[in-house]
Structures are given as C-alpha cells and as structure tokens.
Amino acid sequence: MATDMNVSSGYDVRDISLAERGKRRTEWAFQFMPVLQTIRKQFIATQPLAGVRISACLHVTTETANLMVTLRDGGAQVVLCASNPLSTQDDVAATLVRDYGIPVYAIKGENNEVYYAHIEAALRHKPQVTMDDGADLVTMLHTKRQELLGEVIGGTEETTTGVIRLKAMAKDGVLRYPIVAVNDAQTKHLFDNRYGTGQSTIDGILRATNILLAGLNVAVAGYGWCGRGVAMRARGMGANVIICEVDPIKALEALMDGYRVMSMADAAEIADVFVTVTGNKSVIGRVHFERLKNGAILCNAGHFNVEIDLEALGRMASSRRQVREFVEEFALRDGRRIYVLGEGRLINLASAEGHPASVMDMSFANQALAVQYLVQNHASLEKNVYPVPLEIDRAVASMKLESMGVKIDRLSVEQEKYLSSWSEGT
Image (cartoon, rainbow, N blue to C red; front, side):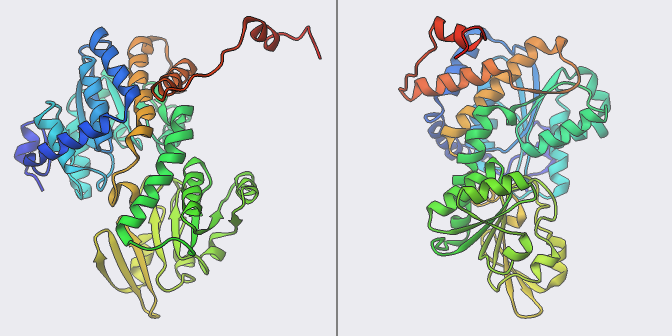
C-alpha cells in the first residue's frame, strides 16, 4: 500500500513504475473507442470544459483512463478515485499520474478505510462536477462534506444502483444538485449492461476458476439488462441457465426467452454456479447456503459486495482459505465446500479487466457529452435526476454506426408528416 505522503503530494497509487505498462494498455484500448476519439478531437478544438473542476469516482481501468484524458483535453481539471476496492488496474492508475498529469487515488485491494480516504482526497479538489459509479462520492458529499456542495453545478451517475440511490435522494428532497443518469441512456444500458456485463462476467469467472461451463447449471439472479447479458453468454458457453427473479414480468420474459425460472431456494439445490446481478442485498443468504451443493461457486456482477451474505456464510463455516487468486473456500461444518469469487465484489473487474473498450466507448461518450451538457445547461436544471438528452443518445449511436461503416435510412419528409399526423387514417 502506498503511503500517506503520496496522498498529501497529490496522488496515491500502488507503484508509479508500473506506468509504462499502463500507458501501452491505455493506448491499446483507445484504438477500440472511435466515438470517444471523435469527441476528444472536438473537445480539443472547442474547450467546452475550460477550468471546470471534476471529481470522478469510477472504476480505474484503461477505458476510464481514456475518458479522463478526454475531459482533461476539453479543459477540465480532473481528479479520479476508485469506485470499487478491487476494480483498480494499478498500472493504469500509475500512467494517469505520470504520463497524463491526472491525480489518482486508487490501489487494487485497498481496505475500506483507504477506499473512503481516497474519496475524501478526491473531494478536496472542490468539484464543480461529480462523476460517480454507485453514488459513494455523492453520498459522502451530501453527508460529511456538505460545505463543498455550494460549488457543485451537476453530476453524472454510471450505474443502475447509483441511479436508484440518487432518485431516492431526490424523492426525499435531499439531493442538492442535478444529476444526469448516464446509466439510463439507451446507448449505455442496452449495450454496456447487456453485452459488456455479459462477456466480462463470464471472462471473470473463467479467469478465476478455469472451470468448463458447458453442461453446468448456472443460476443468474436478476433479469435486467445485465442479467440478460450474463444469461445469454452463459447459454452460449453451453450452460443450462436458470433465472431467479422477483419481478413477475421479467420472470415471464425469461421463461419465454427459453430459460428455466425458479426461486433462489429451489435453484440453490441444483445450480453449480451462481451469479447475482440485482443491485440488492442478501440475494443469496443463509437459507440458500444451507441448500447448496458441495462445490457450488458464488459470484456477483451487480454493484456492491452485499448481494451474497458473506457474514452469514462466514459464521456457518468451520474454516476458510484462499485456494486460487480471487477464489475463497468456505468449509462448512457438514463437510460441504462453497467457493466465493472476488470477495463478492464485481467479478468482471476483480479477476478480469471489465467491459471491452468497444462497448465502453458508448458509455463514456455519454459521460463526456453529459458533462458538457451540465456545464452548458446547469442553470436551468432542478435538483433532480435527469435522463441523458435523446439528442446525445442518438448522436452517440450515429457516431458508433459511422465508425463501423454502417449506413442507415432516413425518413422522407412525407414519411415524417404521415407519422406525426392523424388525418390520413388507414
């Protein structure tokens, strides 16, 4: 762990000498982010964020690094801290500090005390704009650092979990500035959540365990866009997929998509691998642990490490040990062994590298353009949670299609008139 001296000098990363590797990987990722490339060129030319102080609490990955550099090149003064103790790529944190001059407070494996100290350090930047992935930074700003709220003009939120928390704050009348819910952009959740989470979660499971998914029963808790993605990719690997849901509409959809649907209590008795993707707590708890098969593997691809009740599992275990990197074995008193991946944190970032750059390209394009939108329009916005403007969403989709060499049709004037009128009838 880095020292307090680094915190006081403007950054806290594991090892600055890792920067060269981080720079190469960041440049590699940028090749697959053509939309962000376009936005960076626009930002360099127009400087829409000149002098704006941004504090970002995001997963410190190669893709995030390219977003930070894009904001910096648009004139912003950016500081970055980690939104998850296990998601930081230490070489990327190092290159942002050494090669791009962006202060970073993030170390993979940091404990809770250091995690929150890093968020505090990011807030010392006195942000005018916040960028969050789970609302931890916003929560600290509203609870422990309220004296800084007066300078904040707006913020963005990247995750479903964070948006839920922020909407609750707005409903209770405690949210002190407008937030753009980047997570809810169609070019984010339809692609990042489904294709990004789907592929990277399977990647994380396989890197951690090296198991063969074909023929196994894989239970996915939650059939939102992330759950759909995980289920789709697990089935593509030959697994027999089970969906556990609390929403009858989503459960019915999963059933008609060809999956088995059952309660978690029933799935606990037959599944070999469990993936939680709900954003809720104690989705797998003691009542389920009591029914698990020997050798069951549990992991989380939601946001926080509360979806699996690890405290209850720890109390049930006679012993626990690390058997592989990111794999902890819980030996139960009846002889069964249960395996938890990545300490119950995001498995796609704990043991893998997160979403592919080509899908994060759209998510972070939305982030960059949402910050620009806030800077330009904050005076007219209420203290509420807002969707990404549709024109931004469509612009991101159009840029992505163009980068892929795809052309689509446009409505004619006659067609637009027909769709917007009622007089022609049938």
